[in-house]
Amino acid sequence: MVDDRRGEGAGLRAGATTPGAEARRPSGDGAPSGAPEGSSDSRADAAADADEAALWATRLATALTENDEPAAALRALCETVRELLPCDRVQIWRGDVRQMSMRTVTSAGFSPQDAVRLEALVVPLREMARLDASFRSDKLSVLPATRELREEAAAMMFAPFGIESAVFLLLERSARVIGALQLSWCSGKPRVPSPRVAELIRRHASLGVDFVARTDDAIRLSQTLSLTATLLARIHDPDELLHAMAARIADAVGCEWAAVYFAEEQGAAFRRVAVHGFEGTPEDCAVPPERLASFQERVAASEHGVIEVADVDDLPEFAAQFANAGVASYLALPLEDDGALVGLLAIGYRKSKGRFARRQISLAKGLAHHALVALRNARLVRSLQEANRVKADFIAAVSHDLRTPLHVLIGYNAMLLEGAAGPLADAQRELVQRMYDCAVRFLGLIDGVLGVGRVESGLDRIVASDVSLPELCAELVREVDFLRRPEVEVRCDVAPLIVATDAAKLTTILRNLVTNALKFTAEGRVEIQARVEDDDRLVLRVRDTGPGIAAEERPKLFEMFRQGAAGLRSGGSGLGLGLYLVKRLSHMLGGDVELVESEPGRTTFEVRIPLAAPPRPAS
Image 1 (cartoon, rainbow, N blue to C red):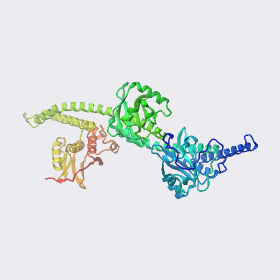
Image 2: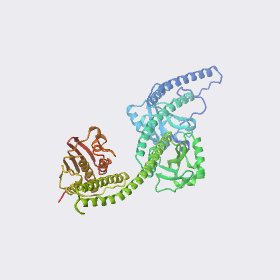
Image 3: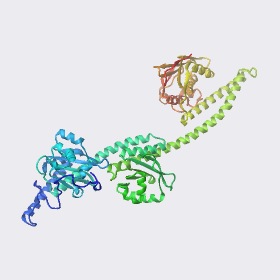
């Protein structure tokens, strides 16, 4: 239904009548009683009216309360009205002010085919607004001859369903128009209910429609809140979240625009930080601190805890500002954190005016709360990311400063072991070898910390290049040869192919797997395999003949700082970052790593990485 400010006047039909204040008997002809006041006939008529009203009240209340399902209760009420009046057909219209349309929510007396057509019928609100100029105030309008209506209305609402006359009752709840009940006759004059019965029908039908509306709104509200909250929770960038917050809430509530305001610091003006729904960027505006107190007072005094402006023309002091911004109506909601006002959310329409639906207000309040929680979490994530970045930068700087003297130490020790300064005695060689081994292990720890720091900082990017699998494996074998015990053989079974991927990350993945295998393999072999399957997936396997991995250790094998029992028995020389880094880098390349087998004497790790292009033969 539409507010009377939008009515376009009477003149839709000829011969329609609206009952006045005189009493009307439910005899079918609508003739008022002419008996003198205080006569025996008058007293008898009053008693009859009271009995009739009691019957109607009982039957209507029973129809609404005997059905647990709101829609079924409303249909039962329509059937009861159709039976008691009687009339041929009953239907209830529900209007959407913002869409300027109305449609039937339930009916009685229509054939199955007509009922289907009726459900699909959407009628412009102007047809209901033209029923009668006094329909809003009198709550009732009579159409004694629908064929005399304007062609458009008759063709849409009456003629297709064989309706010759009708009576409309206005349905309201809490001073809001929520619809209209239509009583229809396919022949003869309408049987106009008495004012007392008409009011009973109106009240019970309004209660039923409101119950159905609240139930439907609650279901939609729950679904929309859940979906929108989930979508907002996935965004961890506060700036992106603010714009998504404005867009999501406007779309969910059915508004044309939305704006979000926040204060940069306590006591400062609220400035717009996100906007949605305007062509271009509207002129920036701020809410000064002195207006916030007035805003909070108005919110506290409002019915729903929001400020609703159905028509900006009602605020002459801001009319020019709203006109320049292209705002016709709006809803302003406070954003509160632990009881403190931290921001404002405004949603509205550019041209449409009128009160917001209860559903829109409830949905906007719920979404604003979820959005504020998501924003708080996003800001926390950003602060944690910033702290993590600072930590990573510090570790990288310290580790880089340690790498340089370590390389020098490793180089000089290697020269001494090779006899560059003359032959070493056995005791001297043993000491130098120990220094060399410790320096190499320390360098490995630093490389692991640096690798994890780059990944955790989010600054490590994918840089694709051509990688020759044979050359990669050959270089890797030479690089880790110092870790190999004399009793261990390293084998390579690699396809002669060139693949397109991130060379540095692929090398780190393979190096960590091979290093891990050599650490725990005292004798036997470590085998490296590299294949391309289906021309689009690189498969790496590293197999060793070490002691295997216990079943209870496997679920947490790829977690940070995890070392198995074998690692602890070997002295715990690592930080437990190698396999964690393998998994993270595999994920960055779009793949994954898996422990495919782990028995004493046979442990195999497998990495699968998708390729953006088919491999080429290596020269």
